[in-house]
Length: 352
Ligand SMILES: NC(=O)c1ccc[n+]([C@@H]2O[C@H](COP(=O)([O-])OP(=O)(O)OC[C@H]3O[C@@H](n4cnc5c(N)ncnc54)[C@H](O)[C@@H]3O)[C@@H](O)[C@H]2O)c1
Image (tube, rainbow, N blue to C red; front, side, top):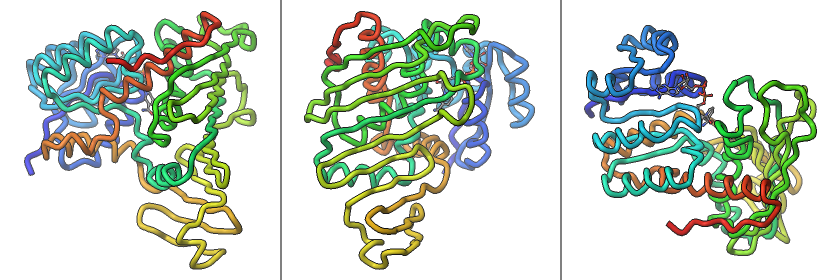
């Protein structure tokens, strides 16, 4: 199959993540990299033996990519997407795909008209334990669901500025928000959130919530909570866990680490109660009434490869998080942000 000509806009942290994947993707040819800080692009370019650009339009004119990966901060979205759509270039947009509802919807409308293929960086959907989790949720009525994501403030300047990052729920915990929507196969109806600005006091330029708690009602009836904090000063207070609770069973999902299912009949348990079984896409360890599934591989690589495969085969249905779906996770997190500010419950508007 002919290699797909791709380019990268944004040579920061996530740009590096994609670059390492491109090195493992014989199906693509990286024809250019671009960053406003040209020195960052030059480092990538040297490694990949391709040209570096400061201006993305110059790059598009010079190297004519078929697809572009966009890894820029949340507040920088807009012009790049409109330009790519106008030129009919397929695009992979990192999460959160934007912070402004109207801008996001305008981009989405243009995508619909153009028919380009899109994907977003919600790569947990491709994690190998997630089909097990989705299957679990489809066979049990999930009455309660929650996640806790506690960590430190990332060492990224724009992250601390709420107008640029959207805050921790929008920028970071959107992965868990998206997983909840995906696993429950449901949409949130209404949210009520509290945000704190009381824990981190002495960090210059810091104005995002240092902690927030949200209560969410999903359409099919699941009640959920999101607990998010960036107040940790070390690893000990950190936590990253999701719970999907049914009346007769429970699944705990630890991002990229393990899935632990309680009270659900699985093949591994039936065969041998203390078995450790290698099963296709990951290990299963069974003991007592809990079964632990361990993920395998790099879901980020699978996410990037799936986008390219969709382009090469002309089948966008294999993409688990196209732009049109990724924006629903943004809108849910933005509804929580609005509730934190207004102190009132907010309906999640997915009518578009
Ligand atoms: N999917 C994931 O797991 C994951 C992980 C990390 C970051 N991200 C997301 O990736 C995005 C970027 O985060 P980051 O940590 O890489 O940020 P970063 O600050 O390290 O890098 C962003 C880069 O984009 C460049 N840039 C901004 N506007 C540009 C433009 N118009 N043209 C060219 N370059 C431009 C900046 O100069 C910077 O080098 C964020 O939305 C973040 O949430 C996703």
